[in-house]
Image (cartoon, rainbow, N blue to C red):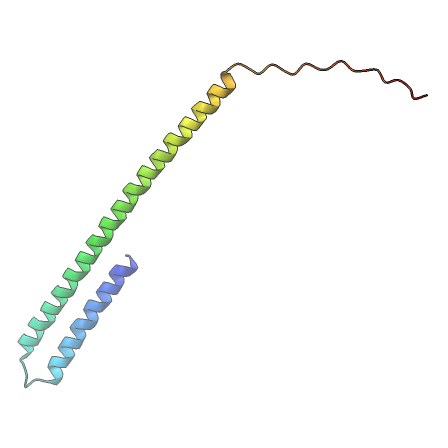
Length: 110
């Protein structure tokens, strides 16, 4: 499970505990059923937000993977073209070797 999902679950649990605790400490404001309903709504809202964030993260990851695949394909095409060019240069006519200049005889110094 990703860190994001662990964090989202922790936030949901904390929100539910806080809502229930608040409602239990102030019983004159609301009934236990109302507190549970509100805690359920808070949990639902938090889960929806976590789901949207996870969906956005998955979309971004998918786009990044597609971009990486496209870049890899282009790099492979470029490497293939470079290999073809190198192969053509090697299979083409060989440059004639330079002819060795006749060696001059050294005259002894007198």
